[in-house]
Image (cartoon, rainbow, N blue to C red):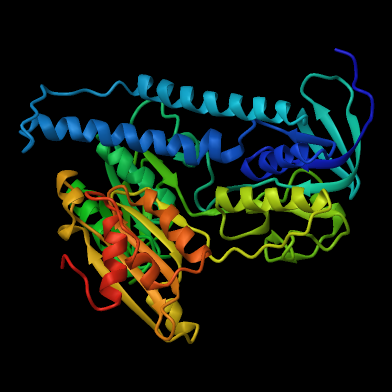
Length: 469
């Protein structure tokens, strides 16, 4: 194929993940000439090797576990003969969903008039990228007025456990050729537990090693208790307060050190390192821009501007919270700003969801956060054990908790744990963003029978007059 001519554009987006592709689509809609450069696949980590495939995998594992549960005499009266799992088909089904979504992103970019160039990019300066396009022999230079960095993040590698061989990241864990008999998961954060639980439900023996004394250490103990109960019920072995020293000499076990400095081998056919993610800052010439950094991430202001004029950064590259929906919102904002509109970054709260069993949702402040921030707050809990819909879903573990200011009853936080509570994140986020008070939520008629009734009941309880508990 012939070499592309050098190109010029108004907005140049580096990275086609949720942040980058949303920014490009919105910019295109606003009439801003836009080029997006992506090295691997549109949709980034989220669509290809993260959020979407992991939810597919979790759903398949749950379906298999339910079938096995029914084979053992389900209380529902459903009877199933011994079910089996065709892992290759599971992976094919997951890949089908991923392909539908990534193809959709490509179509949306095209519709918005965005030019997509696939290839490896290197930053020449704050206005120029050099791209080795996958379909051209010569590199192409792209000059731009605005450069948007949306390069995302990569899994953190542990010094004693470099990726390769039996040591895998979430990427490999989501496309297994076969199930390991014994999986050791390093890290009990949301990625480790989501995948650990799924692998256990599919039939692998799973052990989790975590340096802190808690599973999901970012969340409060009351919220994670039902998840702990599931791990026990499933027979997932927990080694809390322990660190990993590396593989044993024969490579068939992980060396684990306890708090008392004792060491023991933990047999493993595969080791999933889920020790978090770090901004992707290497391999594309970012250091040449000499941007101000905040630790390992690119420093930005409340409009996602970096320290260099007309160079913007969004998403995981800019640090925590590393969430696709945060990147999308930032990307949309930058597109508006480049088009000349007035915008700034001021979300009242950003939801965080763990797709463990049961699911965990956190939006805004929990009671301890409020106390730390010096806010005089009230909080109330409504248990799903008192919710009719939960009973019909065979899942009465968990609760909804609301946190509000004592003086004016302004809602400042929601937390929930339970089956299907990820979908409550919309109601939680909306009430906080719209400045709802406890009375607003309590006075809204909620449909019966739904899990959402627990949202209304929590607000009623905080006001001192819950009806169903």
